[in-house]
Image 1 (cartoon, one colour):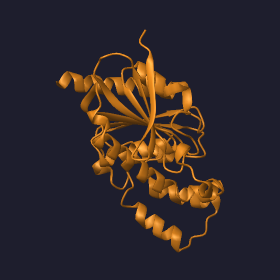
Image 2 (cartoon, helix red, strand yellow):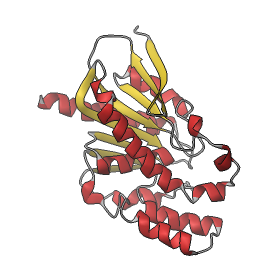
Image 3 (cartoon, helix red, strand yellow):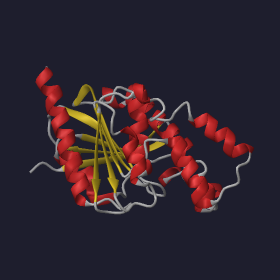
Image 4 (cartoon, helix red, strand yellow):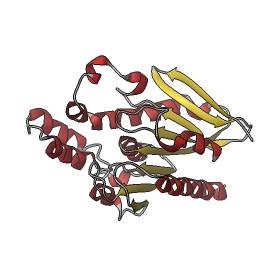
Length: 250
């Protein structure tokens, strides 16, 4: 059995981890995005290893202000204060991923050209969805993530009882430019979105916002915000099916 090689380094100041089977096969790249308060190597069910075993070059990236990109000033904030900027983290990290791919990753050895995928959990799911609106990703997976920045921000205002001040209103208006539901005509490739029926962090109403989009498949599971193995198994099946479709087009 081929061993998985893991390389960890910084590119343009951004910490990344790359997981790849030790063989000479040409492989598609998939970005793996973690959840709120997580980091690039610490998510669920060892999905980076599993995706590498499926034949992907897996790139884990620390979201800004997470993992090795943490700063004491941010760490000292309450979850309520941190959450006020979560959508900015989503936007910035997706653009970080595009820049890394365009400048470096697509030129690495054994990379299938222009064959990029992404997967993420919770906040990472939102990053994955937004990435699909700014780059021609072939297949996108969001596990219990929200496609709408605007509606999610409104929901968190109610959840945390934020004051409707100038900062909040300006943020709300700003997010309309980037919101994947309001700008769903920009979505590239196929999307697979999962939701937990009893999820109180990101209710299934958010997941359903794109259920009528021609490129989107949604599926709900008997779980809360914590993903289960079935969601990942279905996601892996979706990714392999999409990769097969593109292989058959060659």
